[in-house]
Length: 425
Image (cartoon, rainbow, N blue to C red):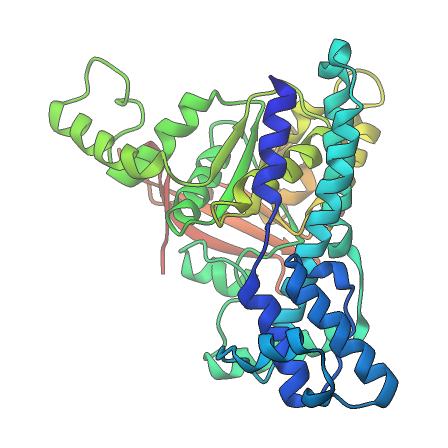
């Protein structure tokens, strides 16, 4: 069974052919008299592959492409084709190159699969899929300085055109978004606070908002059951008290609101990993696997929630282990191009320090290395005197960033029963 599933995954990866794309490249070369250096095997169709070799051979021989000098089959192919070809051909070439990469990976993978021993396929497949994932994402790690700077310039131009839009994804808390410029890929955000203060519920608030925009994510929940996460998200969507969902006290009209929202929620790109104590290697492997699985549906892994980091380690040398875990999560954020939200506990020592309200990030439980590894700390705390009613409470988010505005508090009004946080502007 695992072997059949892996074959199905490979079939989803493969783009068997895109004749339109291949003909576009040929037309561009002939009509613009320009040579595009490609691996001939990038052309899946045999006639377009032979035509590319014919055009390339002539160009390399004489430095130009003369239609009358091409083979009859090539002339027939390009002259009878009435496709439009774009002046900016780079995207088409990149697409064709990507197809070739997928086919090469699939070919190697099929060979490796054929050699698997059915007797111990369960043990061999995890190693195989890990190696396959590494091959697939290898191109993402290549750095082109000119392209990188050009992309940055384009970003700055877009900022100017769009009236200084957020660099990252909105939390829908206006002041927080302005300070962070949105939650950004390749950054690790440590969401900290005391017990029962709403850390996981704040993460659920973000998850609900992002899933609603079809932004895909993964929860590694070592603290909450998957049903608790569903309850939180549906409470946020339906505005129904999360403690009522699944209880005998819920009203019929509330049940209908939850069910209505659940029909949309069930098709949104979320994966919940139920492993009780995850490792860094496991987190990275799940991200890679879900990225491959979701690609066919047009989704991607954009954010990751780890709830919570102290559950990742145990035993002696806990402080050093927590520091290593934090650094590893920050590395995964950069390597996998995701928003990493890591939930962490605060030490109870914060309760006995009168100055703690001004520097709550100094009280990370177990290791200061967690804060040092973070790109941004968001520490939830209750002010000494603040607004609170039966259904809402004032919770401040203390922000400390490696780059940007730091040591500033954002006031929110939290309705924890709905996993909802709103700015108090």
